[in-house]
Structures are given as C-alpha cells and as structure tokens.
Image (cartoon, rainbow, N blue to C red; front, side, top):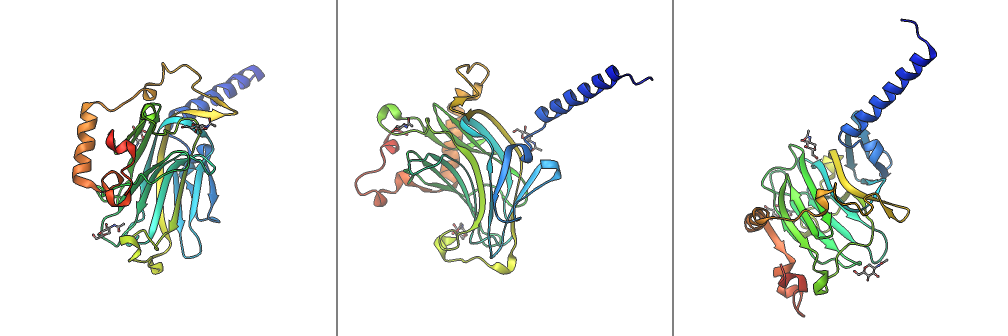
Length: 287
Ligand SMILES: *[C@@H]1O[C@H](CO)[C@@H](O)[C@H](O)[C@H]1NC(C)=O
Ligand SMILES: *[C@@H]1O[C@H](CO)[C@@H](O)[C@H](O)[C@H]1NC(C)=O
Ligand SMILES: *[C@@H]1O[C@H](CO)[C@@H](O)[C@H](O)[C@H]1NC(C)=O
C-alpha cells in the first residue's frame, strides 16, 4: 500500500485516538494521577504505572500524593499491606486539605506481629478538629491480597467502605451546627512510616528492624470525582451524570454498617464518655 502523507497522518491520528481511549478505559495510572513526595527512592511506580509500592526502613519511610485536588468524590484504591511482622508500622491513606483549619478523611492501618490483627483506624477532621476516631479489626488478612478501600465524600456525608461494605458514616449535620468538610479541596495522600511509639498495642510492641524493608502496595485507583482547579469544579453545576454526588446509604447499607460495627469495631469516640467529660461530641447524639 502506498504510504501517502495523508494516509500517514490519519494513521497517526487513529493511533493517538486509540491511545487516549485506552488511557480513559484503563484503571487509574499512577504516573498520571500521583506524585511521589518523599522517601528518596523508597516509593516506586511499577508495571507501566499500574502498581505503586511504598517502603520503610530504619532510615526513612515514603509517601505519595495525588496530582489533583478534589472537592467531593468517590475514591477507590486497592491496598495490600505490609505482611509478616508489621508491628510499629503505620500505612496512612487519606484525603486532606492544607493548613491549620484543614479537613481530613483518614484510613490508617496499624501493623501488628505476625498473625495478630491489624487495626483499621478512621478519623474525620473538620476545620482542623479531629478526635472522631473509630477503629476496626478486618474480617480478612489485609496482607495476603489486595482489598478495596473507598471513600464516598459528597454533600450528604462521608461513607468509608471496605470491599464495598460500608463500615462508617459521617453524615452532614451542618444544619445541627456540626461542621462538615465541604469548602476545602483535598488531595489524596499515602505514607508508610514508623509509629512504634503508639501504633501497636498502644506502643508496647516496637518495630523489629531486622524485618525491614517493610512494603505496602497499591493498585487499581479510581476516582469519580469533582476535580478542583483554579477555584472551579470540574463538575460545574451539572450533577446529572454524577450519581455518586447524591448517593446515600439505603436501609441495607445501614444494616451492613450496624453489623460491621457490632462485630468488628473496637473503638468508637462516640461511646468514650471518659474522654469527653463535658459531653460527647454533638453528632454522636444524632447518629
Ligand atoms: C468553610 O466553612 C466553615 C464552616 O463549616 C467556615 O467556618 C469557614 O470560614 C469556611 N471557609 C471558607 C474559605 O469559606
Ligand atoms: C495486635 O494484636 C493484639 C493481640 O491480639 C491486639 O490486642 C491489638 O489490638 C492488635 N493490633 C494493634 C494495632 O495493636
Ligand atoms: C478495579 O476497580 C474497579 C472499580 O473501581 C473494579 O470494578 C475492578 O474489579 C477492579 N479490578 C481488580 C483487578 O480488582
């Protein structure tokens, strides 16, 4: 076949269209969506951007953050946590804005001795104020396979899910005077670091550096989200195509949260009366 300039040009166009189609169709690409922020080579993007690993040794941990800032989103990531003796290590995976009055939505995974359970620690900060911890054991070993950890953050509330099972809800009770994160854009952050002064059995079990480097892995990031850029939202005012923006738990969802909380929750700030001698936070009476 003669290769005319026009034919070459249309072939190139086809290739580039195909390229952008493949980009859009593939699950998030870590090169495209994230920047490694620290760790001096300990954080790595592998497999053409499909896998990211963080590692921790005695000298340093490591971390990454999203290129985009989001103001509301439904964000999924699959994590496989540090296996074996991970006592003393913390893998933090969270959304956060900046500054002293920042908002934050946290998953933190507190490591443990081989065979002892990780703790999944969650928290919500609004305008710089947290103290809203709930902690859970998981119903699986989070170190042998990837599992999906999701945050749905929309104007109605925040829902934390694990493999599609909701485990915690922080509803928007602004009308009752409880602050809700809704006017500060957040990035996704993750880091693997040493916190053996508090992480495992309250700091009793220290990190065993003979097991270093410790490694946690990430894959299959996906965000249905409003990207915030130069003071504007990519969602504009059109919420028709964004079912997640109005998604709330139905009665089945509430039943599932209740069941997880009954069977796996090990700490709830809302029942820690000792900690709040002046009374439990107001949202606890509304839940
Ligand atoms: C964001 O909302 C909070 C109330 O939830 C308010 O105190 C704060 O001033 C607002 N910040 C901006 C930048 O609008
Ligand atoms: C570690 O295992 C101990 C013993 O089962 C348990 O009490 C603790 O909650 C576990 N998790 C952490 C992070 O300490
Ligand atoms: C990747 O995530 C999507 C949803 O975010 C899910 O449908 C798909 O099954 C996941 N892929 C793997 C390999 O788990």
